[in-house]
Length: 137
Image 1 (cartoon, rainbow, N blue to C red):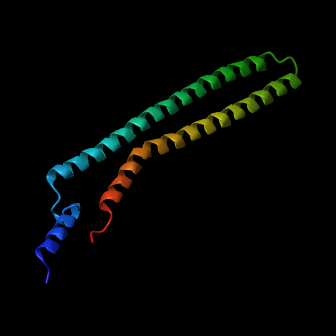
Image 2 (image 1 turned 90 degrees about the vertical axis):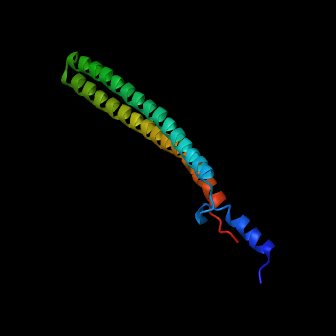
Image 3 (image 1 turned 60 degrees about the vertical axis):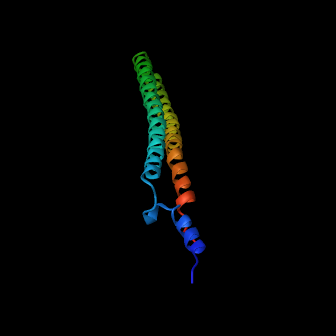
C-alpha cells in the first residue's frame, strides 16, 4: 500500500514534466518565448551573414567587370596574333582564378553563416532535451 508521502513525491516529480497536464500556462508561455527568442537570434545572425554574402557577390561582380574591361583593352591593343592569344589566355586564366577564389570565399561564408545561425536553435533544443527529455521515475 502506498503512503501519502509516496503519492505526494510522485505528484511533485510528475509536476516537473510538461506532458502530464500539470504544466502551468505561465511556464508554457515562458518556454514558447524562449524558443521564439532563439529563433529571432538565429534569424538575426542569418540576415547579417547573408547580407555579407550579398556584398561579397557584388564585390566579385565589380572586380570581374573591371577585369573584363582591362582584358578588352589588352585585346584591342594587341599588334600580333601572339599578343592577341597571350592577352586572351591571360584574361581567361585570370577570370577562372577570380571566379574560383570568390566561389570558395562565398561558400565558406555560407557554411559559417548557416552554422552560426543554427547555434541558438541548437542550444535551445539541447536545453529542452536536458530539462524535459528525461523520463520521470
